[in-house]
Image (cartoon, rainbow, N blue to C red; front, side, top):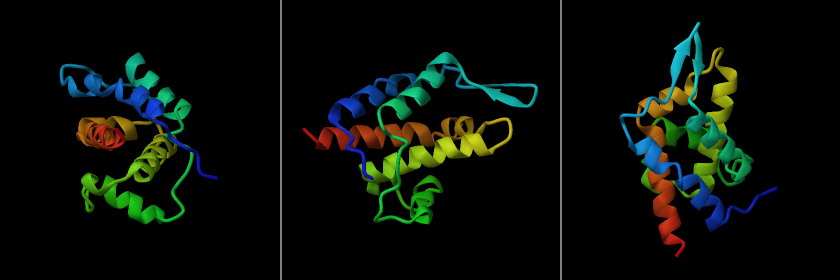
Length: 128
């Protein structure tokens, strides 16, 4: 089942873009081998779920194809909205699988999260 993502859904996620652009923010801390996230990151992750960004993989893509965006073998500039939602779904699953978390922290620190959000902004601008 495909869930429609609206401009409003995208706009709610893009509200977090300035936060991730600000390099002075602390996006995670490690406490006793577990990754903890500040409230703003936690709110972002909740918003991804609430705004339907973590619900499905497009039927036309294989999971391996989506990993190509994460691994950067395919440029994010080629990602469409379905690809972006799939990346977020994989990201959330990776966080749950890794003992102690930290997968999302790695994506933030590497700059990939910011690039994903900037691509989402480009997609949103194309919708107008």
